Length: 202
Image 1 (cartoon, rainbow, N blue to C red):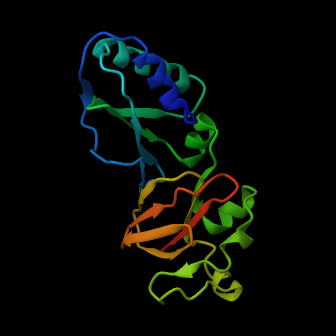
Image 2 (image 1 turned 120 degrees about the horizontal axis):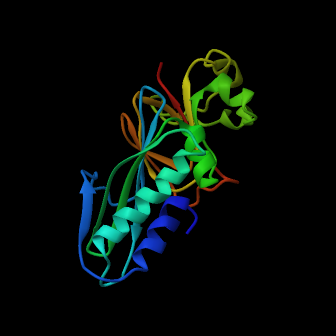
């Protein structure tokens, strides 16, 4: 599995004993979902299919906690909000202090910050040119408009997932379906080489 957090789960679930487990309150999403918070933290509810018939609830919980304790000795703070495995589906709810923490832990590019900051971190901000306006029926973002958006918050995500934002989405790339004022869904084709881009309202 690509994400390290689910490598943890895969290893834990190889210990087969009981059926049904959970801790904390896990949001019941059907697809991996990123929740981008006002304080720049990113909550990620990772959803994976697991078809093992039996597993040890306590052992699973312990292995996840041990792995996160190790992670937190090297990375910025990652908080476990909850873990649930039911009906062949595992959901692990983690909050990362920022997008950089997620990127370091999962080796999967993710950016959540200002447009100007994206350029400072080495992202090609010209990729934002031409993405479509949500309110203006697909009108593309022009270079002159983008020059006034240095302080707008942007999201660059490189994996298929649902997205919930803190502010209204005003521009989105073609590989993202905007499903609500603050909700979107990155297509299955999204990857590190073909990321999805969002610009949020100030």
